[in-house]
Length: 155
Image (cartoon, rainbow, N blue to C red):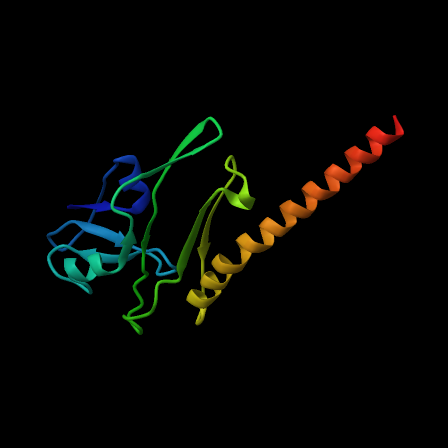
């Protein structure tokens, strides 16, 4: 019996016993790849291939928004597709400090693309959604300010 270590189990430090071919089995996934087994003793991908499929920051980042300090990091592993081993990572992320020119606001998002052009869709959403959200927040604040002015002037 070997051990199976899924991304959820890894996060919680748990190991689950499962049948294997003499080595640990780790489930590779992310980006819609869907949990492809990687056998430590040889299999569809070598350890270096697995490392080449991971994008991450080297260490946790810290940001302060108002009086709140936030620590964050990101890691994305490109899915394994046997018919297209060089398929692009379909995940994208966005981190914006001082969102909407407000030092107390930030924008954090993860975009999980799917399908033939999932990578392009995720990148489009990453590039466009923060702009649209910023415009929406600015319009909402302007409306609130106008309502307050009307209320204050009628009092």
